[in-house]
Structures are given as structure tokens and as C-alpha cells.
Image (cartoon, rainbow, N blue to C red; front, side, top):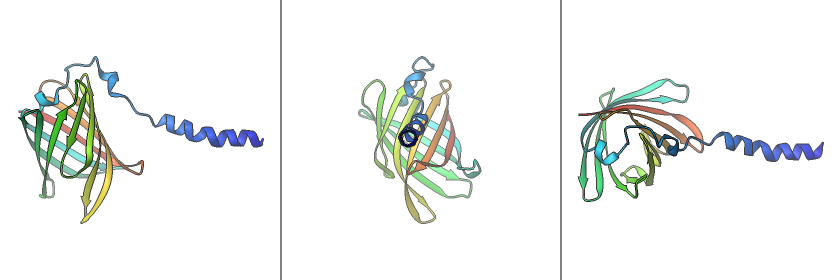
Amino acid sequence: MKHSRLLALVTAPLLFLSGCTGVSPEVYAAEKPQLDLYEYFNGRVDAWGYFADRSGRVVRRFTVAIEGSRQGDALLLDEQFTYADGTTSRRVWTIHRSDQHTYTGTADDVIGVAQGRAYGNALQWIYRLALEVDGRTYQVTFDDWMYQQDERVMLNHSVMSKFGFRLGAVVLAFRKA
């Protein structure tokens, strides 16, 4: 009896953690079109999105005007956000391609360096963000997925979490001009 309790205490967390592993970007390797951030975000891209809290309730809607340009081996994305309540914000990404499948990115509110892996039509970004809400700044983690649908349309789904607990999700639809 004692042995079975100990076994249950040891294996339960391992089973829980194994159930938390997500999809790897490599599973999308055969999907088309082949996503190339430098190509897709070269020029003007518009986006529409929202943030939904952990219950699924949409609590913030926004649009984004993105201007992408190459500067040497870097891709610069100047993102201008306009929220439904009339407020605005800006984020400028500097993205570097490390190899055929790997990207890194930085921005003023990104803590450290965002790590991206692209295969086929999909890209997964993992990064920490300093998120300001009601005058306070919170450090949150994003598991950010982009899926290119065709030459003009890309869809995005990001899960935002803190200490491993899901806070909500950001959903975006991009359209290349």
C-alpha cells in the first residue's frame, strides 16, 4: 500500500507534465505556402485582433498597421496598435534569421530575446513580455503561433501565461497589402 502511494505521488506529476507538451513546429514542415517572415512582412501588413481572458471573454479589440523593412540582415517591424477604446501603442521588432528554421527577435517591451522556429507555413515564437495594465507592469510569457494561409493572409493565436497559468489568448488576422 505504502509503495503504491509513493509510486502514485511520483508518476502523477510526470503524467501531468507529459500532457502539457505542445505541438512542435516541425509537424507543419510539408504545409504550403512556405512561411518566410522576411518576405511576408516586407512592406505594409494590416491586422485585426482581440485579447480574450481565460474564460474566453473578449476584453480588448485592436487593429495593427505594420510596416516591415529590411535593414542589412535584419527585418524591422514597426507595429502601430489602435485599440477599440481609442488608445494607441507602438512596438518595433528587430528580427534576425539564424538559419533556415530559426529566428530571434527583440523589442523594447520583450524581456530578453524571442525565440522563433518556422517549418512549412507555421512559426512558433516563445517570449516574455513586460505588459503594462492599469499603470502596473507584469512579466508574462507568450506562446505565439502564426500560420500563413496564402500569399496575403496569415492567422495568429497566442497563449499568454504567468507562472505556467493561462491568462488568456490573443487572436489576430493579418492581411498583406
